[in-house]
Length: 367
Image (tube, rainbow, N blue to C red; front, side, top):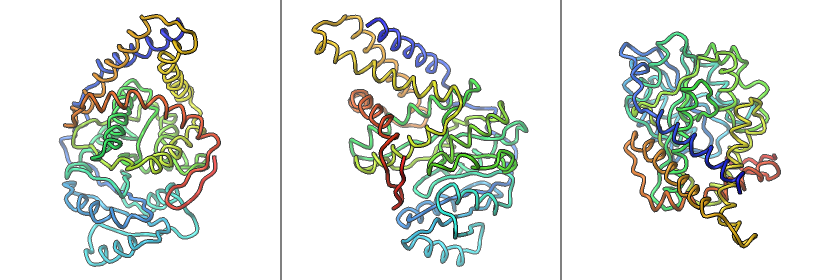
């Protein structure tokens, strides 16, 4: 029992420290001068339903000098055809290129980087939405010469209960990513809102040695860049940088998504990443053990319930503060449901990723 209390108390103190250090204002990353010329890369496969909305968002970008490179990863729907007609008719900054021999998101990004005309590269996904000032703002930090990579926030959206719970849970990652990056220990990133110098990408060999999993075009690349440039990674938390995307609509889609995300953890080699992963498992196991202990031992210490309550309040305050920075509300009933359910599936995916196959974009991958 003492070990459980110690694990959770340490975690609570870390959450409170993160709460204290969270700030939505990043004045030094706001630019003020003309943002550098930027190449936006959008890898896609079978996204015909989402591409028109994304294109509309990109048409409204206020960045004065950018190009958009769509990279078709062997789509079998009409998305590539729609884009081809759009690019031909528009005859603007939008380009469409295709993968031929290679497959996968990483191969698509590499082809996009190779084709990029500009030094600053930004990546996003075809199912995303963003404000008109997004591209200009996410590129602005590169005005500081030491910046090699910029991480940006991604918020999940949706109307059903399951999607709202995912949105609340995922918000914690935004806060943790910013705080850890500010401390010089970035361990997470999201390819739906990621920017880096083309020179830095090439310097670390792109996705060489990290291409055994379909995921990791963000976190695994972050590791390589951060190891080469320890002070070159920043997180821009400005509201204009926010990218949104729909949460998984049902358990099946959610399961395949999380198994894919978890698959990249096996490629993580850095100590702080491994410690963070083990810490998550320990905290969730400790959380579940408090209501289970009375059943197994017929006794428990009331102070452990107090620790659990403190954990709940600390997480709620932190997540609410992060979401408020982007004008998202945090209804307590939804948070409470998430607090109860999350430990179960966090442990499940941590284990299942080591032996369960998963599907993504019509392709099956083995662990």
